[in-house]
Length: 555
Ligand code: NOJ
Ligand code: CA
Image (cartoon, rainbow, N blue to C red; front, side, top):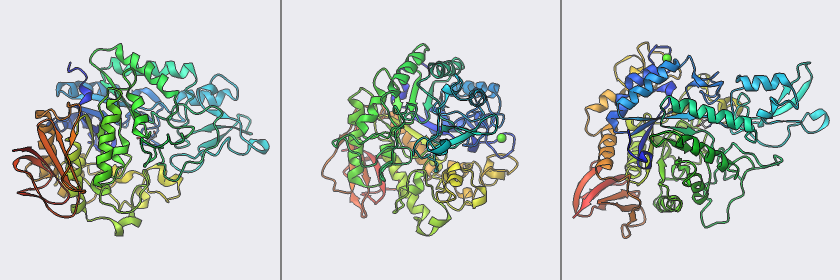
């Protein structure tokens, strides 16, 4: 596997291990399950997989709370299972990106346990963000920061003698204490972790909360503007506006030094390994700093993910993304779904405000779009995304057109967001339901016992992979066809596109190399230009119906 800079144009398929395939029937997906089902990802035409965390973890945040970075959690298997998975992926021609969680550990990590035991002022405590409280007897948290999952971002510990002690920072759940990235020991430990997995043959890392590691000096109070998403970012922060004010815990300049160091670590290895940052940073020109030539190779384009299905803004975001990244010599990435957001087969058709991370649930049932209508739109959006130059990220199940599951009963919910907000925000369980493989098998083929850590809906039978395999009109067939055409016409590898005028306000029309792409975001049919249709998100004749995207070679 020597294709230089493969990541520039790759289609990367995200596997959420808990929900992909379960080999031992305990209801939770695992590594042997993934290995056994991996050929489906190759058949889709993807170039790489990204695996959400499978390291040792008490699973308080579905594995994003790591207690040992260099071992596999028994729920998912063993280190040998991880080796077998990597070997199988490489045999299939798939590269493997794993998830690295450097902003915080689990509170069960031995570093945190040592910090608790060693007490205030100790070198052990310096691995984390411990501070004295404010007010009488330090009874108040050190500042006003809020956790992304709701509630205060600080928790007070108890001293060994039972008296109340210091507070520690956790931008997420209280079981996820933030590390202190000013500590050279923390930095050295993570360089070793990178090498451990690189030695095992992984091709790269998706870096969790990559914009959170460095906090502003003095940890000043901060109240985010209403427009900010829970992970930061400022929808509406435009490139030509003044730089929006930075939260003291997101996107601080100091993070870049860390990724320059990591770039060097990856460069010690052959085969063009890659870092992809989860950085909710806006505007795009600021995000592009993350992928300067000596830093990360990729960063998720969440501005694109958060843009509504509206032609004018979407057109602008596409133009700005390509330009902002090109300015630093990097391709853009594109993404519509992942394990943290409402699946785009539902999201793009909802007409009410729904903050990232809030999820959907029974309270929203009445105002949801009809799912076939919403899927039609999602397919059009995917067909547009797959036509763009750069790398595209897919989230397991979107190739089946899976909708968000909104009727999960309260008692099965697992996302810490649900608990920390007292049920005010549903959180992300609705996009994490184990995926269907076979319409007529227990757990829809997820395993052989029928167990499932989140209940699967009856409608999964309609979406099962085996049903879609043989249907040329299925969403799965559309994904395969377009990914194949994308490779054939080199769409991902081109440096730029030409946005075409004259098609009307509700249309996005572009040329990428030989291919003309037309997306109809309006409410009535358009005439298609003369030419040969290569592929489309729905049947097209002479006309392009609403919520449809077509790829053509024009006459
Ligand atoms: C981002 C991950 O994608 C999300 O699932 C997780 O809860 C937070 N980071 C905290 O690690
Ligand atoms: Ca299992």
